[in-house]
Length: 249
Image (cartoon, rainbow, N blue to C red; front, side, top):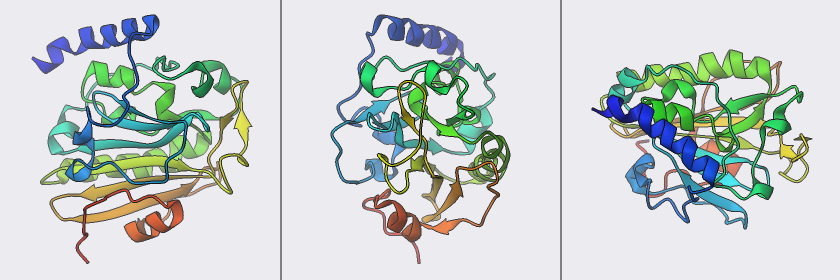
């Protein structure tokens, strides 16, 4: 039944976008299921950060960088078994964001960067979720060889394989890190979308109460590297991704 209605839901989503009828959430109250214990990450507030809820993920979006601050998913063996949707490649500017705060297709055109998914298309379990994953609110400018190589193979695929074997929920939070700051980072396109220096992906296995993170430089020469600890990810980003969680030593 879920799959039967998924195509219609995807069509409705694009129709709403074209009329501007879909509105950004004021908080994550409508999609707390994507966060461990229902608690979103804690970080210093910024004026143009906006919470957005989608069918299969949640985004905290920055109107300053015009990229996600982070994107949260909840994966499991069940969701991975259902993640067989055909990739759509229909990228779009998300009309739920103010025009001055969102990336556009023109920003990436000829930039030399990929539109790098934070919530990967390969994780999506319905046509609607697949369509939504191509929102530019879910993208960062990513070095193409890194996006299609180490990130896709040693991070995204590895995370999916882990979730497919897990005995419970696996919470995943992915995002960019700008160094030395957002304001000082390179920019692309007429909308000045900021290019992150690093990308991270946090994986938290709720059943085992274990967490680790991948941390990669956003560069064509980047290679896979061993995961870092959750404590180290917190130190580097200043974000408490798992508030209320005490990890097993």
